[in-house]
Every structure is written in C-alpha cells, then in structure tokens.
Image 1: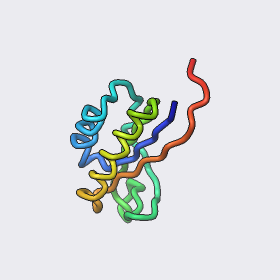
Image 2: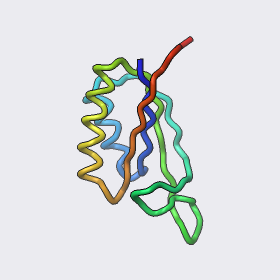
Image 3: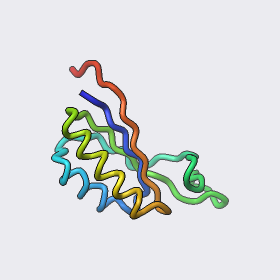
Length: 96
C-alpha cells in the first residue's frame, strides 16, 4: 500500500475529483483549508500580502491505483501549472 498526499488549489478541485474518479479512488480524507509555501507557486498564507489557501487529500491506495492517480496528477500539473497541484507518495506500512 501507498499513502498519497495531494495538495491543490481550490480553483481546480473539480478537476482533482475527476482525476480521483478516473483512477478508481473511492476513499480519501479531504483537508479543505491549508496554508503554506511551496517551490513552484506563490505562498498561500491567506493574508493580504499572500492571499489564498490550498486544499489537500490523503489517499491510501494499492500500487496500480497509485500509478493511475499519479499519471492524472501529472496531466493536471501540466494543464494547471499556475493554479498549483502537487502529490507526495510514501509507503503505508499499516492500516487499522
């Protein structure tokens, strides 16, 4: 199993959920409001100087589903580079 953490701009949330559907992901945890600073976009700190925030999803998936989802995220990253999307994958050792 793999854990996948997808951080994205709320403006592309519809596209992100379409990517989940296309990948066969049915279960996830949604974090609707995050603040942070990344390397490929402006900071999203929800202030007057750095307006905006992000959303995120945590997904536990098998290898095949992870590969499908990462392909979808890569396509979204190309299409919506300025809005922002990023995915992180790590081993998931145990699920209870």
